[in-house]
Amino acid sequence: MFAALTGLGLSTAAGLNAYIPLMVVGLLANFTDAVRLPHGYEWLSNGWVLAIVGVLLVAEFVLDKVPVVDHVNDIIQTAVRPASGGVVFSATAAAAQLDHSTWMAEHPAVGWILGIVSALVVHLLKAGARPVVNATTAGTGAPVVSTIEDAGSLGLSLVAIFLPLLVVVAVALLAYILWRLTRRARRFRAARRARTTTPPV
Image (spheres, rainbow, N blue to C red):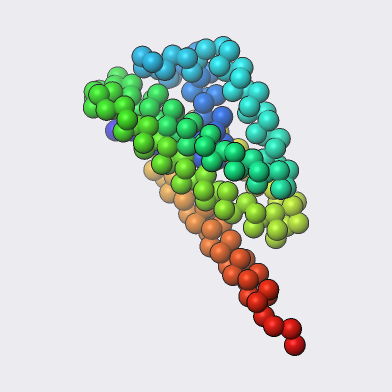
């Protein structure tokens, strides 16, 4: 159970930022005993892999805070974030020693699917809400929201590893926030369509 909660938390965090959970898992596996990567995932703690992830993380950190550019970045990340979610879910949930169960290790595809779906759902909600934030704040909200998303991804990654029981609460809170943003996005689009279809007086 704990391994599944850890995987869920990390893959959800990947939906916000693909590289933060990868970096957290890799660094903790490399320098601590908090994460024990199963066979086949040792590459996550490789120094060269961490360096590449670090470069991509810096690029994501900058690009995601620039209006319009963040939208293009979200399109690119539609493939990257779910893939990252699949990796981190499998890399943690497949470690049987975390929950004394071999089921996840014997069914690795399940971890990949759950991780991909979790990250993809969060990514789509985030990508759908961001243009509305930019439009309603004239672009000034992009760096603020992006910073909150990065902090959320980091916080959720750490909670998933060190306090997996709190993952349910954290994911529920994130789902509520994204739901509110999605509702706001729908109202904004509906109001804009109404303005464009209203005939001039």
